[in-house]
Length: 542
View 1 (cartoon, rainbow, N blue to C red):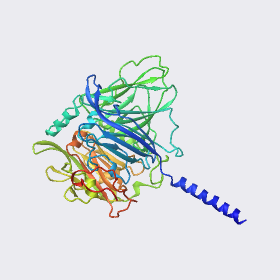
View 2 (view 1 turned 60 degrees about the vertical axis):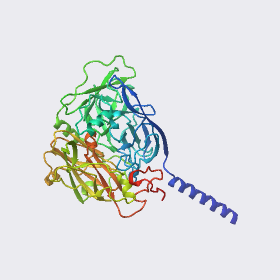
View 3 (view 1 turned 90 degrees about the vertical axis):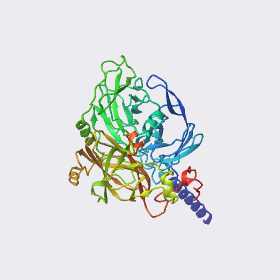
View 4 (view 1 turned 180 degrees about the horizontal axis):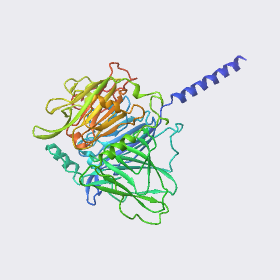
């Protein structure tokens, strides 16, 4: 009897160990090995120098599932330093992996660095891009898909296919020539064309008749808002940068620079080929690119005029933006269970008003937020902060409100408390559409309108189902307001995605800080972290 009891106890203990092992099992790993090179590309019909990843332009797609660990070994075979950033991937507790110069030392030529990302509590459509200099104008970008875990319900049937479409403006000039223009203190000319998956025309997607497909559309360009449409077909919006949306039907969709959308399209028309059209918005000269929506049993090639879209109409775009709302009935992988996080009922602890501007500083063109034009330090800010290296930056070097001073240069860092709930208002006094991105976070876009923001503008905020995303537009002579819960400790880049303006200073870093030094709130510096500037020679061993 004692022996039987002992055996039963062993079996019971083994079962507990097995269950605990399953519960505590580490999330899956996906491994990528990338070689970044220059290579000949011909998007405009003549040879250009492009940035290729494993010989591909655009780069390879990253496919993943919520909570996956992504181990991406990047070999820099270029002749200059290189970094990749992950637009929309939050890198929770780990701004060391963000891939911008404020957080990472660049990968030197001939060297490699292994990023260790986790798409923690995320689903959705994103992209990666090269963040150094003006590399973004040469390629090196690619799509990121994060699927829901198998047991998490998705608010639409599984599509028959899932295509990524990377759209963006494109220059005929080499990225080094563009950088030289900017370094000389001048404005850039406008881009010459639009690309769809690396081509101005000729990209073809195949659809089975009667079936529904998911299209993930990301604007990876350098400045232009773009309108996306499909000849003879409607689009059902289902997801924006990780948020399931109210499933509204659109005939065309404005995608501002840096933004990502997912739509469902059903192949329910006569079986022949149709245009996919992408054109610039709010420009005097309309640039258009096309791709082919190809039925598998197509009996006729694409024909007829390219479908037209909106051109300079601001109100049309503003009304569409306001119609994009969060699907409150959909399940999601976010840290707070669906329905438990009512952002409209949380007290705002701080309001930050950001005013963009353009001016000459020391005879050169610069751009700024609150009249501070950002200049990089000699050491990545996150490393200086981690190693307590003084003199690299000053917290509070950009104020919460527009400054009466003339524009000036500084390494602008704004301090913020961990777990604060803040309101940020972007004020655009210029005649262009602007687009802003915050690394490390999604935020609720609670309001946007023309004119000057005042405290009375809060009366029109959407406090129920505003869309949560990481990139928002601000229309000309207008404002956009967002709410953000600062629950991700780190050094995070807030920037314009109008890349020439970003390069010439329209950005800063938000230092989300807690005095508690715990891996519960922030991970330790990676042992493989590259060290440069005043951090060179420091130890990454805990």
